[in-house]
Length: 203
Length: 160
Image 1 (cartoon, rainbow over the protein chains, first blue to last red):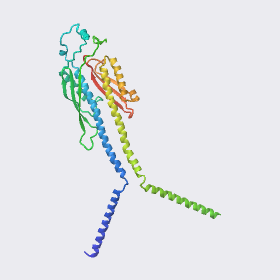
Image 2: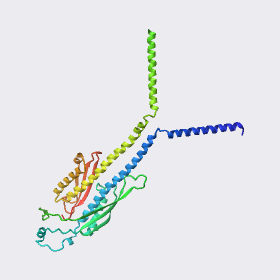
Image 3: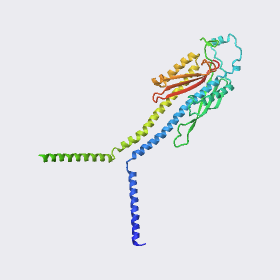
Image 4: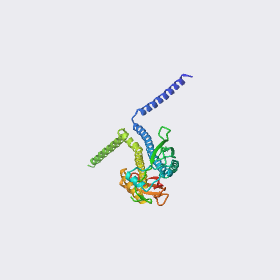
């Protein structure tokens, strides 16, 4: 290798280093300059807003689904409590003086007994009915309604249900796409006051 | 005389040229300087990005709120019907209950006017022992002009 070749290599290296420094300066200037800084802020804010919006939509859908589940549970409890235990209801003997004496003494009505075995069946039928509804009775996000607990003491009924609600959007930055909701409803029978003749209310 | 007029015309032309050149250069200077660029960036980016979000948020809130109200109306309207003494009384009481609840829950006059109820019954007449009744409520959302619908179902007591 002679002197001329070494010099030309040195010149080429120096030129490429200069080009690299110029490019680096250019990028540094671009990075430190203010131009376009607002775009980054706006896009960042936009992403945060979209993420918040998705979370808010999910929370709103949970509230609406919860209301739907409560309605289904109440309807099931109402249907369950209609099962009259006839053998318990028609116990004892009444005379023609029983009703007038009860009115005079202002004695409270007997509680209406519930047939708990039939109540379970009716509750499950009602919940099944609500679960399989594709119309506007139940929210679409709400999956099948499951009966988790039923307490029946013969005069009152309390049921607990459970359902999964699927979010319209997956919660951002997580793997959460559904939640579990529970609802409780209790009900009892009450005798309707009034004077009835052959099933027709006269007073 | 003629030469003087030509000179004046030439002077005017030069002045006009200078003025035009000055205006063009000012315009280019204005375009190339960074003053006010933040406003342009904001308008160009923020408005197309955020306005659809606000529109979505507004419609979503309105629809969600009204659907919740429709569910309450269906549920309470049906309760009023089932707890009444007869079919006629039930329909009257149910309509009154729906109207009062709708007003109290904040539906607008247009939404209340567009309220429609539909009863579906398994037995005829509708108010029969052990019958199943479904009440569907529909009304038009005032903000989005979408139809909001909700239903509720209940069984009439077999011992009525």
